[in-house]
Structure formats: C-alpha cells, structure tokens
Image (tube, rainbow, N blue to C red; front, side):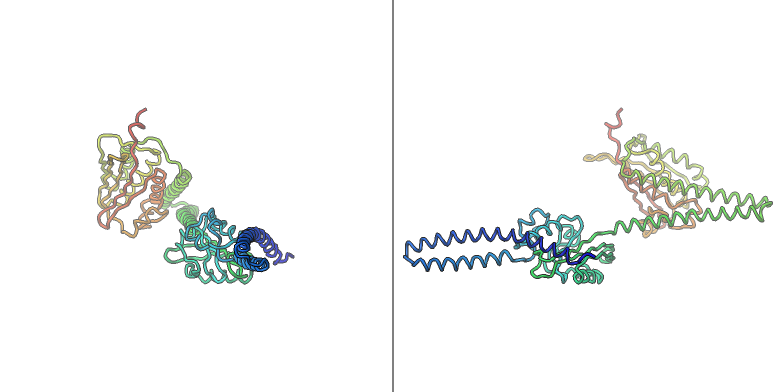
Length: 461
C-alpha cells in the first residue's frame, strides 16, 4: 500500500531544493555587495582617520552579519503571492498582481501562473477560506474580490464550506455540484484540492486550497431540453399509435362484420396515421436543420414567388375554413440568399397557422416589403398577419419551443404537431435571421422576419 505522506514528502523535498538554490544565489549576491561596500568604507576610514585595524575588522564583521540576517529574512519570507515579475506572464490583472506581491518563492510563481492560465474560474484560498488569489475568469464571473475576503460570502452554500474543511482535514481533494439560485439559477461544478506544504502562498505551515469552478448551467439546460423532447415525442407518437391499435383490435373482434363501424373506424385510423406521419416528418426536418445550422445557404430565392406558391397550395384549406388570404407586394422580385425548400417550409407554416388559428377573423394578410437603406444593405421584411383572437403575452416567448401549444386540444384537432414554429425558428437561425411575434388578445397576431436582400452584383449572371 502506498504511503499517503510519500508524495507530499517528495513534493516538499523538491520544493525545498528549488527554493534553496534560488534563495542561496540571491543571498550570495547580496553578501558580496555588502563585503565590497564594507571594504571600501573601511579603507577610506583607515586612511583618513587612522582608525585601528582591529576596530575596522570588528565593525565590518558586525555589518556583514546584520546584512546576512536581513538577507535570510527576506529570502525566507513566504508572504502571500509572488512578485510582479513572477506573474507578468500569468495573465492576471493589476489588482491580482498587487495581491500576490513581495515574495521570492518560485513554487508560488508557478502556482499563480498555472491558476491564471486556467480557462475556468479558479481561487487560491487560505485554509480558513480567505481569498489569496483569483484568476481572470473568476474576476469576470464573480467580480474583483478583495484579498483576505471570505469565499463563503461569495459562494453561500454549506456544502462548499464542508468540502473545503474536509480537504483541509484530510489533505485530499473532493468534487461536488450545487445549484446557485441567486441572482440567476446556475449549476456549478466545484473541485477543491489542498496544495502541498511550503508553497510560498501562506505564512505558516498550513497548506493553501485551490478552488476550481465550472458552470454547467447550459449543459444542464440542454440535457433537460433533450429529455423533455424525447418524453414529448414519445407521448405524441404513443397517442395515435394506441388509437390505431385499439381500432384494429375492435375491427378484428366485435366489429368484424359491422360495415358502418368499419367505415367510421377506418376514417379515424387514417386521420391518426396521417398525424403520425406529419409528426415523423417534422421530427426529421428539425433534425436535418439542426445538423446544418452552421452552414448558411447561399442560393438565390424569390420570396414573392414562394409566397404566391404557398397561397395557391393552401387555397383548399383557406376556402374550407372561410379565410381569405391576400398578398401585398410590389411588382418586383424580392430576392434573398437562402434554401428554397426551407423558406417554403417557413412560409407554409406561418400562413397555415394563421389560417387555422386566426380563422375567426376570416382574413390573413401576407406582405413583403423592401427596407431600402442608405448606409447598409437592403433588407426584405416578410410579414403574416391574422385577425384572430390573438395570443396572451405570457405565451409568446414559448411559442417556438418544441411541442409547446397554447391550446393542446385545439392544436391536435387541427392537425398540429407542436413543432411548426420550432422548425421556423431553426430555419431562420440558419438563414441568420429570427422570428418576431407580436400580438394582443382580441387583436390578432403578427409573425415577421427579415432577410438580407441580394445585391445587384449577385443578381447578375
């Protein structure tokens, strides 16, 4: 079994040897300088004032002894931090340099340099939790902390304090995660380790503590979104599948020879099968878009032609719903860089949603406008307005979430999968744009996005 003190003893020996060579060289230089000064002063005193040689010799020895004692104290000082020269390359701020000044320890310089180079927030602490040093990411995340301030005033979590005390007592390391609720909810990964003895960071024999923090909030949010997505997708597929299974069992059993029931059940089964098909198609579309989100499409697409095509395609649905769809655009082309199939999907989702959920107003207005600018590239504004009941303010920020619906029953009844606006958002993100939603209850809803217009140079062959 490995002796737990062996590694520490070896480390201590290495640190002692390195410190000895560094301090011995500086002390020798200072002693030589003092001897030369004393010899020069003694010679002048002996020649000018005829002072006895024995007095000069004794005085010289006394001065040299005092100088050596001062040199030893300076070389042995293990105050907080390192010299300015030692941290100049560590990437620390002026405030941090001030905190870690006036020491000769090469080990402390290496520790500060390492902590200052870490990409995550890092603190060096006294065993009682007082801050010795914080690296630039820590200053950026938590603000500048005064030297000697308690880390427990910053991280108000009992588990952090318990972990630090455990590492101090056991001379080991530990790893925990905890939620920070104020001012914003964060999931922090905390690694605590006790450093070796004689590091030069503290004035006594108690080793300092290194505290390393990592923000896992975004990763946790993505994991939660992924889990919610799988759960919602499973639920959406399970419902029509259960319906199909039930009707199949009925048709094979009691309704085997019932013609009227068979016709009714087959219509319902067809509806449920179509719903599953739409859901699967939307899931595949969303997955494909997310795979290519970093690749901006550069084909040239005429938004006016796309809008006219979609309005004609959805004409049977709009007539069946009693909704009139109009297109307002000048007699010109509205060319934008993009992928035609994806922009068709965007326009179709927006117009179809306006027909389905804004049909109370019996009117959907699609407009395309060229936003000409003097000092910037022209942009194309695409807008879909309905005259329906509108959307409550609390629902607007969540409309582009996957499977989010304001009215679940109404959405399913009208064939919605809950993925349409999520697909729109991701497609527009790929086209370096965004979806803007404005609405008031009782005053309809407006969905719009802006794309950069194709310049004349790109239009020419």
